[in-house]
Image (cartoon, rainbow, N blue to C red; front, top):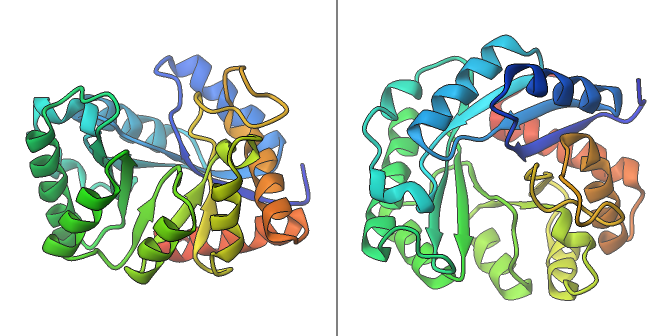
Length: 253
């Protein structure tokens, strides 16, 4: 077992049970001791809960992604009292694809912010090409105490605006991409207790695996990218991001 331990703050495990088991096993062999399996629809959130109940070291979130906002959130709330569920989301706004009407996205996002308040759970945010509306809705609804910008893709200005609202920034493999200097600036300015690392597997494989199907086991490569941006050792990033995840999700150990 790797001496450095990691939390993959955000991944999407395979629907197939045997495939998911292999992914979890491979990740643990690479020192990834905790995985957050993230829901993107009511149906997927139910599946995440089932996997979290089955696999040690796996937890679930329950949420409706902006792509699925048009389908509503009926059935989501009853999942939030499950012991496997550690956050609401991922939810938010995606104006790049507009798979759901923007007004519907905004309402479903606001509804899930309120659920995070009601159940006193962290909120996992997806925002793409929608920073101003995302901040406006958060300000209107009230920023949950533990709010995470997953796969943070902004630059220093967006990072500062997020941090001013008390949010945590979660960095993905994009931090290793050559064309992401502003993201690395954001990683460099983020306080040591305000960031996490994620793979967003099976998407966004980090350099040098870019272009392949991503795996939670590669979160250490993301950590290396963050370490380079911050000018610290990889082990420092592992420890800081582990501690932040423990605080955000109220894990022990």
